Length: 161
Image (tube, rainbow, N blue to C red):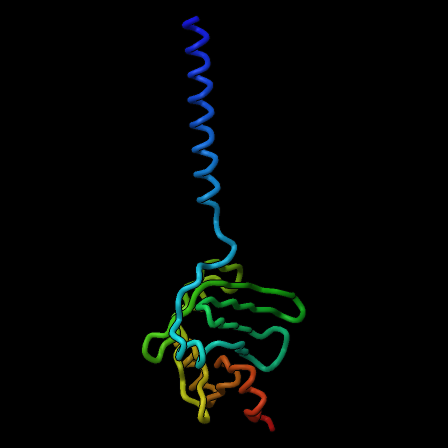
């Protein structure tokens, strides 16, 4: 009888420990989306939207800032396909947009961390601090180095027009 009770207790303990480990494992699985971070209504109104960097080729960079404080970015090359993706959260600190990636792949790994908010033609362009030297070397070619909001880009003349 004592053996039977000991066996039942051992099975119960194993069951409880297994259940605890199983549920602990479920809660520690990586999330597919970044947690949303509150962004002020003023910042959301000013910055939320889709931005584009490059000459309009499929190989350009695309950055979408959502009003809930999350972002998604892609980098693709027409001949090679998607070259990297990033998702994370964003916030504004002074004249800097701070990006906190949650997940990055390939060429986007470590690529977007901060973007300067550079005034341009009554609006602004987002510019990586690392690209400022290239921008100066190429005669302030913001169309190559800056992220333009797509709804504004349509009203901005291209440099060759």
